[in-house]
Length: 315
Image (tube, rainbow, N blue to C red):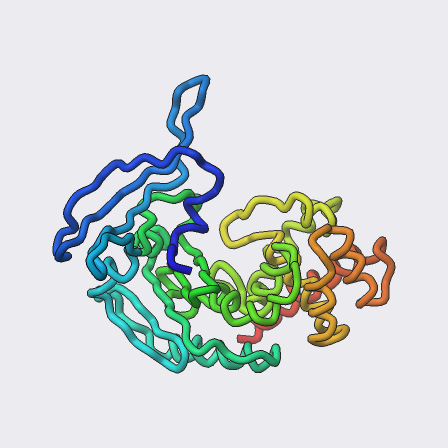
């Protein structure tokens, strides 16, 4: 995919305004182009920006072409290749090689567990702040919320962008997106089942799957009427490291796998995009009625949360 930013900036906005065009410092025969993507409120005339991004114009075979910011803004960053993963990070960062080695090994083990070929290579860009990492890709402004810990994946180009001050070399959720894409490619998997699968296999928000369970149980205890169907239809907003949609569907993925292995995960992934289709498939796999599914799921969350507390107590 030639344009690394297309998934971010092309979201139905019609106003693209070039706010800066000038020579790119330090780059021969190259210009930088900064573009604002925004709409304007008719009532208040307020500008509502989606993104401010940069690309470059450079000469190639006697003509001007557009070029991505990523390789230019990171050309002086450090590069460390371990196994299939090339870690790219600012020179000011102290590289945690043991963590990176474990992350590289995770790529191979995840592919083997799902019986698919491991990707030949993955470029893993990270800083201590997701905003900084996305800025290095050319997104100088993009609404990601208040939490600067997180990641994004470009599965087509096998690129991972991570921001985390404490887990920079081992933020595996986005890697799982790249590794498991061949497994999911034959299916039209709904977004939360996809994210649930990534969260079950690799955690989220810098935490492992097991570490996410106590907060999920706490939320369910205070929201006794919340159902899987409501989560799939209108998931609660993320609160810090708690994402009820991601974490809740991760538990459902684990339940389905425990009941039927990879064949069951394939059935869930291929069930369709509608909540009733997903929940119907899960109920069939687990051998319960759809009305019993929520209770079984809540009990499983409680068991997993207790297991994590007992693990911490024993350490």
